[in-house]
Length: 179
Length: 448
Ligand SMILES: Cc1cc2nc3c(=O)[nH]c(=O)nc-3n(C[C@H](O)[C@H](O)[C@H](O)COP(=O)(O)O)c2cc1C
Ligand code: SF4
Ligand code: FES
Image 1 (tube, each protein chain N blue to C red):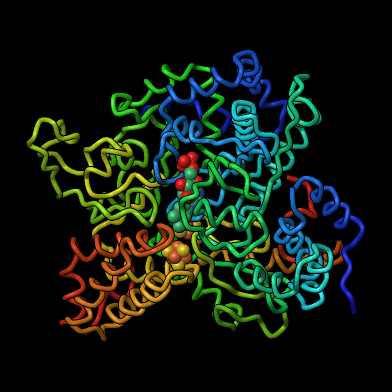
Image 2: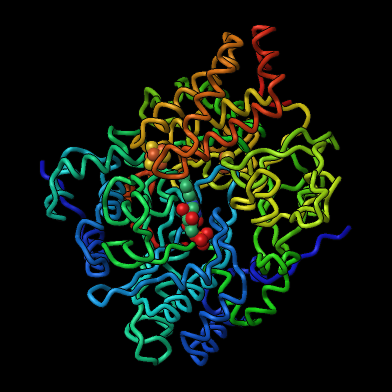
């Protein structure tokens, strides 16, 4: 089925469009908007972006594969990125990752069987002074200890239904405005 | 010694809901913009030059001089691209400005745009920083509603839009020409220079690329005057002016972002600001300014007997007693970089540190140049071998050669940024790599 943006998201796109000198410059912002709705960049999303911006699907695909935030396959309903880079590893990031792998029963790069969580590693997330840390959907959780993880996962499960009902995928950069 | 806090860039950090425009205005916000509009573009540019702001993004180029290189093109508009990609490992200072004081950033962008006759500012923020993006977008909406930007700026016939542009997870997009490609909707691959962005930048138009902190500093330059601002630095005489944000992470008691004059020492940063090393252990090594900067050690002493040497005043002292400035750190054989230090205590395995860092560069190389693409993965694989205890003495030479062959042979500075720290670690901690070969293993953990 062809992909279409919801009217709210389309309005965000239409507000951005005249502010750039080219349509193509909207590639990343539009991909984000689509992914916020769809949860990943499906082939239909690629078609949609290409058509909207009047560029080829190969161009869009080239962008999608270059950037790590664009998910090329469906993720779990929650996505966890554990920072693995130097300041975090010095402060115990590996312990956090191992504890999560155990609790979730999956390895880094995988999704739990029930489709609830995708576990990923991230490169430095600009929170090095609060190491170790992880990003859970669109929130940072800092100064972590393994003991905090159960609570975090529980909280994510609880919030998930609400979020899914409101039509948001794990990471919503522009669709949600509150700050 | 009590840590000196100039409380200029961070003065609103403690204010409740500091990101809202009414709170920013109550703290005196947007008064610098009013003053700047009275001064006019040329005077603003003079003040920024006199302030001696060395770019806060890593290369340390003087902002005022960069602005003077701008070559307006009668056929094209001129742009400012704000670099808020903050991806350099160990660096986390710009994020605090965006989250805690977004209006200071916006005010800086407006003043810079007015000074350079720019009508569109693109602020490129790394996509992971969702809160920062939301706060900046909210700040733009508030500033527009109050008439600070839009069809006019405070009633002056000067049209200005500020667009917050999210990245999508790629360290290389912090490199200025890669950032421009990414902004244009392309893969974030760096461009060959010249032409420099000030001549041909975003969308083929002249563009000033500045780090976010560089521009967030501009309202204070206008408030205090360029010369007075510059003199807040301890390295004013080296044309390295003002105050800046320092980050400190790793094995310290109070990691975080601290504001201080330019030119405090690493010892001051670690002991006076960050409370010293955890468990009062000894420092083994410090990455002084983001992961691409070669490490320093406390036991190394400055050798600058010649009175004309820039480091002569610190001759015989520890590297950690040298004021942190763009030129002083370069003279030490490292770099000031982003001014964010990673501290490692004496339980740290430098083989594991090298492994961690090289995995980062292998992942982030954009792949355009063979020495960088192949070299970074090769260094990562070799470091893995040392960490696993399967490396040979010959691998040590290969590692050294691979790093040397990257240096100077690539389009952008990412390649050098990977090779320099690798060479630095090999030079100062070769014995740990040799031990890994001899014993057939490296420490299991990176640190205790
Ligand atoms: C690989 C690489 C990554 C970089 N990442 C950043 C970054 O995240 N933020 C930044 O401001 N500058 C970064 N820079 C430096 C920019 O290329 C550029 O020098 C800077 O944005 C100029 O602004 P300034 O003069 O105000 O410092 C990076 C450079 C390289 C080579
Ligand atoms: S040095 Fe590396 S990151 Fe830079 S352009 Fe070449 S391959 Fe890409
Ligand atoms: S190293 Fe983990 S946030 Fe920077």
